[in-house]
Length: 376
Image (cartoon, rainbow, N blue to C red; front, side):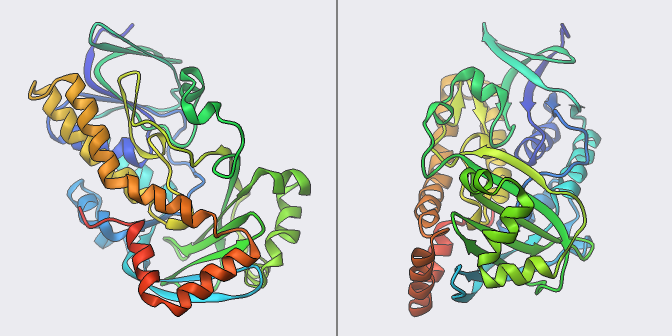
């Protein structure tokens, strides 16, 4: 066992984990981060980030202004029947691939002194006598604080029998996600959401004149069709806009997929481990705010962790304060996302949603604002 006791250990090197590690390291904390993959790598993600975190990412050392990234300020929503809604995004966002931003943040973290172990899977986390022991395939490591930033679903969730894991399949879980990078002629300033039976597909521009095409659907669709290609040809292409899109794009690589996605409520602290990003709660992708929420959660976790390490608050206060702040910032967004989710994936409901939004532009603006926050 490594006898060094780190101030903080972070399991998972996505946006929440990386930004949290940088913030702590800049504050003089010793941090170790475990990532099961090797950077850079692709993830299933819509790759659209709300502008609310633009300034904060700059303070962490990510030079977004110099990266020539597409700025996105318009939203298009279509139904399977061909109904369409055009609207502006009040705050807007920007496109960047996880392949790039995660790798760039990893390099910043290393520069700031974070110890990052790649190809390193955490198999168990044990809390005893105020110290965490993280058991991995690279050995065991100790820390005073531990954070779970490992994403939508992990072996740790199964080991701990977290509530969302043990639930039977319902309307908020058992989804699959599929993502490509493609070349196409879509509007660079627009993010589009195209409904199809029991799912929806988003497309928006990222760096290097490429687009991210990512869709979410019930696992039953794939089971019935037998393959991703057949599902795209039959189920997705029933939407005329999506049919045209799929026929006029060039896929740059084979699809990245993920299964067993759940939007059920999750706890923000598990066995004294602070959760951030999708580990703490996943907003429905159609809201386009998951990446920004992960970054914001990393920021608030860093603040409370620093107070704990400086003995300004107890461990109980750390856990309670973080959970309450997380709920205050993100709880309403997640609840709104779950409600909106019910309107997507069914022809008549998505038509009703789009027609209502067309008639009441103020309601559209309000709905978007309920799933987003303010710059932080």
